[in-house]
Amino acid sequence: MHTFTESSAETARALADLCLDRLQMQAPLDLSLTPAQLRDAAGETVTAAGIGSAEALRLWEHVLAPACLSVDHPRYLSFIPGAPTKAAAAFDMLVGASSVYAGSWLEGSGAVYAENQALRWIAELAGLPAEAGGVFVQGGTVGNLSALVAARATARHQRDVTGRPRPGRWAVVVTEETHSSVKHALSEVMDVETILVAGDYRGRLTGAAIRQRLAELDPAQRDGIFAVVATAGSTNLGVVDDIAGIASVAQEHGWWLHVDGAYGGAGLAAPSIRSLYAGIEHADSFIVDPHKWLFSPFDSCALLYRDPVLARAAHTQRAGYLDPVTVEGEWNPSDFSVQLTRRARGLPFWFSLAVHGTEAYTTAIELTLDVTRAGRMLIDAAEHVQMLVEPDLSVLVFERLGWGAADYSEWTARLLDSGFAFVTPTTHRGQVCTRFAIVNPQTTADDLAAILDTMR
Ligand SMILES: *Cc1c(COP(=O)(O)O)cnc(C)c1O
Image 1 (cartoon, helix red, strand yellow):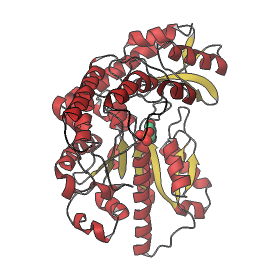
Image 2 (spheres, rainbow, N blue to C red):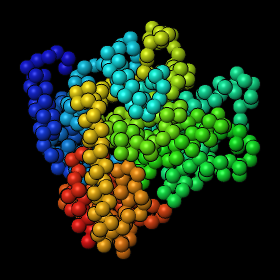
Image 3 (cartoon, rainbow, N blue to C red):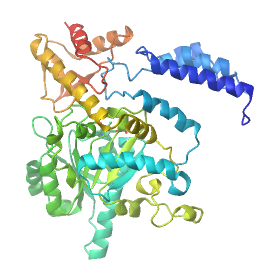
Image 4 (tube, rainbow, N blue to C red):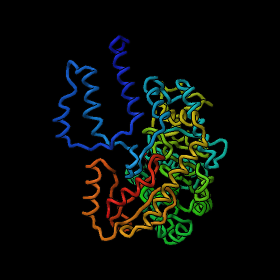
C-alpha cells in the first residue's frame, strides 16, 4: 500500500482526471438518497480483500458522489452555500497529498507562514492591531468555542490576580439571532449562562438594548458576565449587529467582545457595505469562515485574537512529549484553539488569495451583493412574493403570499427532485417563509428570477 507502483500511478491519474472533470464542469445539483437506496446501489464496500481502485472509483463517481448535493451549484441557495475558486479547490488536493502537520511551527513552518499571511489580510480588513493573530480551525463552531474559552480563561485570570472573587456562574450576553453554535458552546460545552437580550425589529443586537437588560439583572448575574457576542451577518437574516454600540458597553464593563462573522465577515472586503462593520476594530476575537463567502473548500474558519498571548495561555496543551514543540516565541497554531493535530486548512484559501490577489476577492464579493440587490428588486416588483426583512448582506428573506408550511415543503422538494434548485423554508418571527443566500459569484439574477417563477 505504501510503495509507489504502476497501479498507484494509475489510481492517482484516474483520481486527477476525476478532479479535473469536477473542476471544469457545472456539476448537477444531485440528490440525497436514503440508507436503503444507497445499500442497494453501493452494497458492502469494505471487505477483507478490498474491491480495488477501479471499482471503488466507479462507486464514488456513479453512486456516492451523485448522492451528495453540489453546494457550489449556482441555484443552491439554502443555508450558506460554498463556492470555492478553482485555485483553492485544486490546491486542496495538494494539501492532501503533502502530509503537512500544521499544528506546530517546528513541523509546519512553511504552511503556518502562508496561513498567517492570509490571516493578516483578514486582521487588517477588520482593523485589528499588528499583534493580532490566530489560527484556521475547522469551522465557525470550533472558532466560536475556542474564542469563548479564551475569553473565560482571561476573565478567570484577571479576577485571580486582582483578588476579585470568581462569580457563582459565568455568563455571556447574546441575542435570539446569535448562531446556534455559540449557544451550544456556552450551555452544553462550557456550562455558562446565556443572557438573552432582545434584538431590534431585524433581530440586531444593540448597545442600547444591552444597557436596558443590564438594569433588570440582579447584581450576581451581572457580575458573572465576562463576554458579549456580536454577530456580523446573522445566518438566517444576513443582518449585522450594532457592533460599535456593543463594543462601547463591553469596554465600560471590561467584557471580552467576540464578533461572529462566520458568514458575513467576508463583507469586510466589500467597500459598499464596509460601514456596517463599524466598531469591529474593538473585537477581542473575531471569526470568519473562508468556506462560506470567501470561496474556499470545506472546511476552514479563520479565528483571530486581538491579543494572541491570552489565547495561548488558555489553549496550550502541556505534556512532556510536547515540550519540543512548545518553544517560546514560535507560532504554534494548536496553541490558539481547541485542537492539537491539524490539517493546514487555511492553505487552499491562502493559495487562491496569493494567486488572484485581494482585489479579485473584493470584486467577487461585490458581484454577489449586486446580484442580491437585483434579486431584491425582482421580489419587490413581483406580486406573489414579499420581502420580510431589509437585507444588510447577501441573504434575502421573503414570503410567498398565501402559502403555508406544507406549500413551502412541497415546493422545496419539487425543485430539488427536478435538479433545478435547492431553496429551503425557514422561519422569521414564527412565520414560515424562505430565503436566498447568495455567496456564489456564478449565481445570476436570472437564476433568482427563474426560481421566483416556480412560486407563482
Ligand atoms: C455557519 C455559521 C456558524 C457555524 O460555522 P460552521 O463553520 O458551520 O461550524 C457560526 N456562526 C455563524 C454566524 C454562521 O453563519
